[in-house]
Image (cartoon, rainbow, N blue to C red):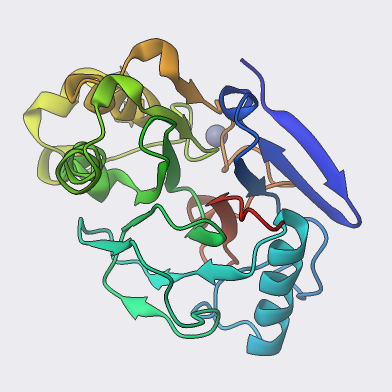
Length: 260
Ligand SMILES: [Zn+2]
């Protein structure tokens, strides 16, 4: 399934077709187009911690809020771990204050948008239409090693009563099999991942994430893989692997407020 492309003002973003039948849901995979930052952050950089001017980043976050029609945008300091921030009551405004050490964002509160920032890592969006709860997960290869996606399914089960077979999951553009080279994989990746090599030293992290979701009970037909490589698609996506010193894309999901 291809992604759906949206052009809104100067912004260009993608949507998963998997979520198209849920009017209560709003989401966007924002490209780097439509912002005001200068190289190497050109142009829609959403990270406050890569050296870009803060007022530009905050302006971009405002553009994201306006594009999706949401009032709150939750952003956290991501650390390639598996700790979660679960928001089940309306929080104070969190647009500029970042929690630290969090890679799993979960909420059932309408109007609270969850943002993951990325440059090659996966943002993995979850929606349970039965329990009306969403998650947005930052998952790079270290996240795969810790099975942060399986952990998210467990947290949705434990905290909201979600059934894995009800979960709809979208895996964002991210480092693809043609570019995910791990020359030190024997030290970095556990042996059960070694079969994900597509050729020597190159790994299919997309299939790995799919398999980790399915192992936790997510149905394969309810997983949509964007299938776009951030490292290859320089016009749309920042890539740490390609550029090192660069900006961050944002992938955002929210339950729509009743009054919006
Ligand atoms: Zn690539």
